[in-house]
Structure formats: structure tokens, C-alpha cells
Length: 243
Image (tube, rainbow, N blue to C red; front, side, top):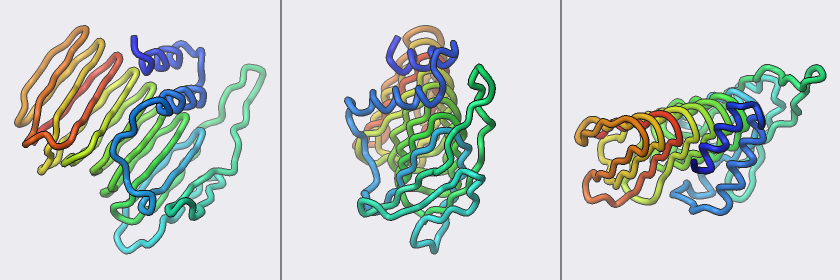
């Protein structure tokens, strides 16, 4: 059982909460390799504990905008040649057993092609429109995105779904428990390394593979394989659609 699957298992058993899972994912990332990412000048960094976040890429914007705050107390500031988003609200606990409040929702507008670097304990992230890069650490929840050219996702438990065009660099999706469904956009030039410790693995389109059970693996290539995409799921499903 790898470390991401252990985190997902602890979440499922209620031994840690999503915020703790996010911190564990962050600690794992500090000792790992950093895949391809957006330049600092074109990146928004955000760190939230518990929220549903909708991100809309818009042409004509010169800077990110908080369109809907949702009571999170969000604040944008220029930092390190890019932008930083923080929330001023703090989680409140109800009753003797520490029951969390319901999640709040916010809407962000980003310039088309900007990169997003997000650390979130629990919630759902939906991205409309193209971003240059997505780097997401999520304890528990769901990530869906329309289009990206660089991908670095770590999720304890939940689902990842979206379209990515990879023509170089190293990219990854690591999930403890749940489902990954990716579409490789036209023009992708990539080596694929897909695996699940226990579950189903399917590849469609120009590359074909289907298998289920323990220790499922697939390796393939589109074009010359100038980029690299590694997708690993501890327990669950991996589905990749190639051009």
C-alpha cells in the first residue's frame, strides 16, 4: 500500500480529517520531484481549508478577480511575480464531537492561460476554460478542468477529470482512492505510465488497453514521447482517452 492510498484509507476510516490529509500530501510533495509548472509570473497560488471553488478563464483580463467570495473572506495580492489568494475566515466546530460546518462556495476569474497552484483540504474544484498549468493538492474531493498543458495533482480520496495536452516535461496524477478520467488532447506527444494497485485500468482511442484486478499497469506512447505522464491510483479506476 503506497502513501497516497494510506492517506485515503485514514480518511475513509475517519482517523484524519480532510485538512490533515492535505497537510500529509504537502509533506509527501516536499520530498518528491516537481513536474512541469507554469512560470511564476503567470501563476495564482491559493491555499484554502474547506471550500468549493469555481475557476473561470477569461480573455481580456490582466489580473485575477474574485467574482464571488461566498463568505470565505478571500483576498488577492501580488507576490513573487505572480498572485496569491488567501482566505481570512476560519473553520468553526459545532458540538462536542467537532462537526465541521458546510462548505462555502467561491468564483474566481483568471486570465486565459494563467497557471493555478492550489492547496485545499476538502472541496470541489471546477475549472472552465484553458489554463497553462494546474498544480493541485486536495485531501478529499473532486477536481474537474476543461484544458491544461501542465498537470501535477495529488488527491487523497475522490475524483480527477479533465483534458490535457502534453508536448514535453513531466506530469503526474496521484490518487489514493477514487477515479481518474483524462482525455489527451490532439497534439499530445507523451509517454504514458498508468497504474492502479487494485481496480480497473482502461485506455481508449489510438491506444487500447483494458484490465481489472490487482497490480494493473500500462505503458504506451503518443508521437515521439517528448513528455511524460504518470497516473497512479491506489484503489479505484484509471481511464485515459488518447487521440
